[in-house]
Length: 168
Image (cartoon, rainbow, N blue to C red; front, side):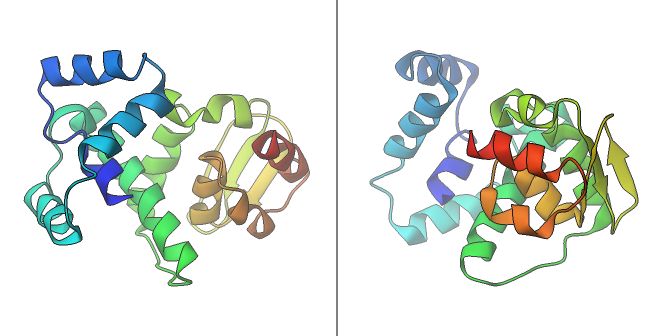
């Protein structure tokens, strides 16, 4: 996970184009290329890279840093959820991540959330039209990102539709 999160930080524009070409322009394969590129790094080296890239650069700095924020929040929660280590994320960060995440092409969220109204009950955020999917912002973001583990924390008349789209 750390290799994926950090793998875009050191790329120049030419390096980014090269990575996309090596990955056949398919986002999942492009990500796999990046992870492979960092596969020989030790955990200590990866942590040091993270510490040296606290301010996003390159691709992740795009959209005013929203790529880095959204990607970081989702993957941070992937790790925390698997370890059963919950964390409260500040509302302003969740709002930005939800807004960006629901339209970010790499998350494929538009197809999951099309025709649904997303309602974060804990931070007063909502977007979209149609049957509501309601719940706290963090599981809502995780579901928007396609994480099925967050689905039991959501409710509303659109929750089943979202679940079916995630499970494909």
